[in-house]
Image 1 (cartoon, rainbow, N blue to C red):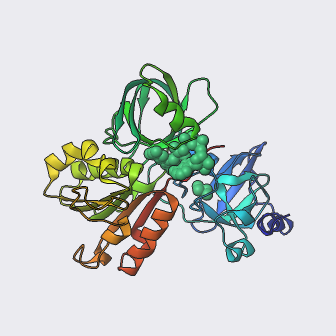
Image 2 (image 1 turned 180 degrees about the vertical axis):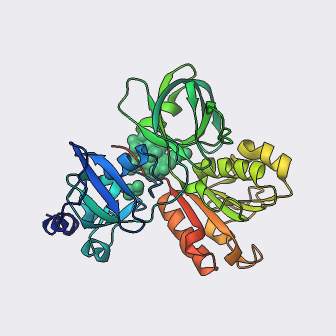
Length: 366
Ligand SMILES: Cc1cc2nc3c(=O)[nH]c(=O)nc-3n(C[C@H](O)[C@H](O)[C@H](O)COP(=O)(O)OP(=O)(O)OC[C@H]3O[C@@H](n4cnc5c(N)ncnc54)[C@H](O)[C@@H]3O)c2cc1C
Ligand code: FES
């Protein structure tokens, strides 16, 4: 048994039943941090159950790789679905009894310690629809839009799981549109930017041919990257299709928070991969005075005529890029190494880690 599993199982031994019993077949979960109490059905996942109950539980990937849902288990019994020793939890956290809520099946009443937010969350649902448009963008990216059979609410920066009808392959993709009016029913059509990964099940299937008319299932919305710091000036960093949640956050802030300003850094390998302008052209046109847009390429050969900045997105984060980093929020979306490098550099430059919000595009399927 791994160190992480032991830490989780050890917490059981000293567990004491809570004084108020849960309904039969359910367990009572008490968050000692804020006194919040909720019930989880026996053997259900702690995170999913909390999300279903519209609890603003910290999470991102839901597959045990980002570490956002880490929770201190003070007492009670969970069954880990993965080996926590191989998860993002550090040895120190494992020794202190931390678990990943997204990978914890609840087997008894629990006492936990986690920072639960106060945002209104949207219940997760399953909605069908058909691909209404499919087009190739530069950089082996497909812009796919799905016309939904019933409206789906979502918030800026959220994502859903997407699957072809009849297939077991489900992957996370972020909405790139302006979120629907929170007082309305939801979006009738949604769009995603999907990067083709050679050998990738879903991105390969989508890339193969025009999929217009295909029935799809969406499970969501999920994620909370764009819920914080709504009225702050922000630095938005997108690596490749990390642009999707950034575009949605930008559209939302431009509409709802008129005073805010944004520095957007978009990084790809070569100048031929630059697809962002096509996606955010309307925003740049409407609010160009509020958006400073920087494109940077990492592997563009010399002599191709590219005169813009070269390097990784972190190279664009220079000390004089913004007037005072400590007053800014940051949203960072893209692959894991890129996000981690940006988080580190932003902190070095003075951004408060509490105001850095990241969406890590970690591989989400088997
Ligand atoms: C919260 C979240 C939001 C996401 N949003 C988006 C989005 O908006 N757009 C988008 O394109 N992707 C997004 N992703 C990634 C996406 O969910 C899939 O993981 C990705 O599209 C690969 O799926 P696949 O079925 O094509 O490949 P798979 O069949 O799952 O993987 C095939 C192989 O490729 C590797 N692989 C998977 N992803 C990558 C990668 N990014 N780089 C290099 N190798 C990889 C796998 O490890 C595996 O070896 C997001 C992921 C998360 C966690
Ligand atoms: S590890 Fe649980 S949400 Fe990412």
